[in-house]
Length: 359
Image (cartoon, rainbow, N blue to C red):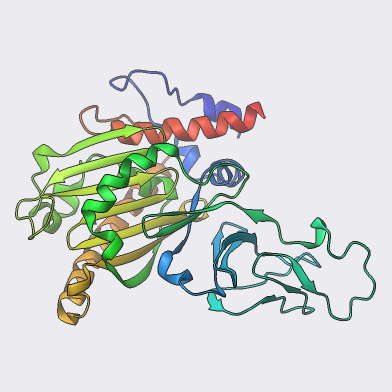
């Protein structure tokens, strides 16, 4: 398969009414999976941690995507750092999960780093020239707080799309800042990560057929989608809004793989991690309005309802992935009335690929 040929099969300039979606090769090829790892997931900020995971000094959280791994730490002075998660000695993975401590110690030979990434000790190593130099320090990466999240940029770019500052009003109205985190769950998916994102960005097109329970609470004819720069916002009035609700659900997607859903008294965040060609894992975090967090029955019933929605999405996304493997499928078409946000996602992907080719 020639990558350049497969790229040119998608034309981001064709009018939406005539446009074809990216070809099936984008969704099931190891070549494209590797291309995305080197381009898409290096050019944009990635979900690294929740703010509650790094509340205390000395705390750290590891994050992984494909074969890459990073650490986010809060040092003993309270400053945040984004660091590579590979020892500078022989490359061992330093940490997994999350924890609290005054230093990061390699499990292989005991090389010890401060929470700012500086090498503090290399026991038994002898007289290494330049031990305090940059080649012995953990590489660092920009980290920024947004809402209740910490975003890490895996290159030297800015962690946050400036356009997302416009979302501050939504963040305040959502009550997210005062909500309490209640759960995290992981959902393995038998589909490419882009299939999951596309399902999210179809302008509510699939909701009435795939999610009948969810559809009953939404005024789907009034579903609206807007997009700019590196985000897409979908809104829909609620049929029976809760007290203090803004009266609508708001679904915000940030390129490439982060989704934040505002539906009072809930906010949930999902980020999708590619795990190989045609496979991914979706990680969900839920927050609830603080006064409801202690109501176990309410929280469990809401989580069960969310589980049903994820099971429905997993089923339909798996069917899409299977259909794409058919020799009879090459490229699809867009619904002009609904899928402008999905087309925006595809254009952003093409920008990433082109940027890499030009570099």
